Amino acid sequence: MKPLFRADLHCHSTCSDGTYSVEELLKHAVASGLSGLSITDHDTIDAYARAIPLAAELKLPLISGVEFSTTLLGESIHILGYAFDIKNASIQHLCKRHQSRREDRNNKILHLLKKHNISIEIEDIMSQDLKEGTIGRPHIAMAMVRKGYVESVEQAFKRYLAEGKPCYAPSQEITVEETIEVIKESKGLVVIAHPHLIKSHKALKRLLQMPFDGIECYYAIFPSEKAEPWVAIAAEKGWLVTGGSDFHGQIKPKISLGSSWTPEETFQQLYNHYKSAND
Ligand code: AMP
Ligand code: ZN
Ligand code: FE
Ligand code: FE
Image 1: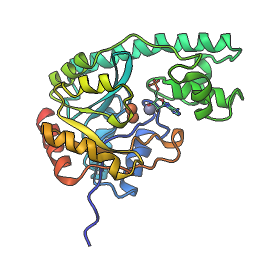
Image 2 (image 1 turned 180 degrees about the vertical axis):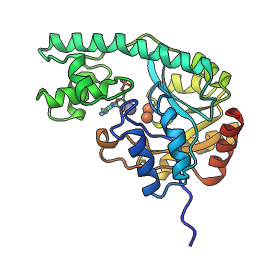
Image 3 (image 1 turned 120 degrees about the vertical axis):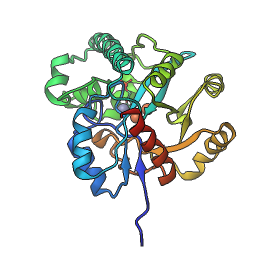
Image 4 (image 1 turned 90 degrees about the horizontal axis):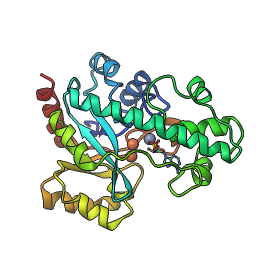
């Protein structure tokens, strides 16, 4: 029997807050029987310099991807970009803007933690968890675990780092609209990430009026009935229906690569788009 075609379009490498390196991630995808992949690191496309030649070697179809953090009506909204031109200057510039946004926010978070007698230095993070790429809250959480301030990453978020908790620091806002514009400028397709997690009804309503190309209906380890309302919205709007695991390795140990996925026809569409954008 032909194996089921599964393409995971949402995962993170050590270029952001995943714990698998680009090489480990691609090899893991092949070992997991995946037929296609996109690495969607937070606010960076650094993975692709190494991922593209290795994926070709492994004969694993790979399309460019990224997960951008945006803000809408005060809520943090994640936007996925796919199949864009890797060399496009606008998307590279947006990644740089995010890098300085993060540096600024990380300093604020570390300052707030100090006020709570938790002493984490940038060096503590860099030396251990981050070999490359962007620092995110999970890296700070891991340093807190290592230094014995909390028992787990989950606890670090729950007590200190999650939105509304005492050491949460908002960052400079980058809008959904400008993010969509940059992805389109780089010949990419724009997809709403995990709509299931959006809390504000008003923000969701506004988001659904924007010019997206797709929506991530199948997500992580959510049961497939959770996808139904989003699949209906995609049908109404003529949007692509995508799926991905949001695999992070040990940061989210319950979620395995390929736990949610995109079927063959949609992946092929994205793959063809990627090929022509990167000609
Ligand atoms: P940042 O991009 O720095 O704002 O960090 C956001 C990332 O932190 C998310 O993409 C998740 O990977 C992770 N995260 C958010 N909330 C939690 C939580 N409660 N427990 C563990 N990881 C979390
Ligand atoms: Zn993450
Ligand atoms: Fe996300
Ligand atoms: Fe993600």
